[in-house]
Image (cartoon, rainbow, N blue to C red; front, side, top):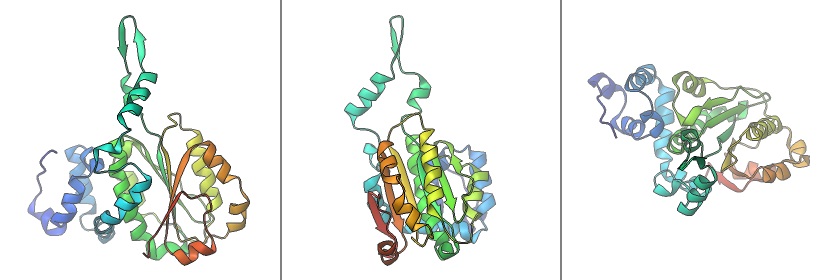
Length: 266
């Protein structure tokens, strides 16, 4: 990893622990040095930025458990098993005369996007920093895998998806991710429909991951359980993880098609 230079000004504002977290994050490393400095300068006085990063650091051990549903970040096996990689590359090999090769863009597009549906209703306002702190390490994972990270906030409406190409910390988008918060009641069905539409557009069709962050206090539970989401998710081979704020609320309004569920209050 490239050694970083940091002025005393930054060191007095951002702790060494925060800087270490950022500089070992592949999504931050992917930025040009000038962009790294711009990002740090923009957020160095922002309490929410510091709080979100500190939550991410504190959650690292818990996130290892969450990653049981996802490829691991720290181990080399975040890529496909070797035989699966060979088969995938064989299928993408192009013949030109006596030359066999895999186009560069094929090597860059091995994984489908990861989509995170995050509830931002009034009832989730107290969990805003926690939700964003949980999402932040996923930038690293997606940057390592060169896959897009799509964040889809929702309340009674759906916000415009935040699409971080190859998991890179694009500063303008990241600022929207950090500060944008919706309000009102929550309706999860439109958000799930939007996620399915985005996966329908995915041409890679490999390792489709959907994470849902919610307090399960949405007002369209009946349409949810009457929907055909379970069948459609299976058809698209989507793996669904849920991070629920409360086990009690999840039991009242469960998400029936979740493959894995983790509770923030545990």
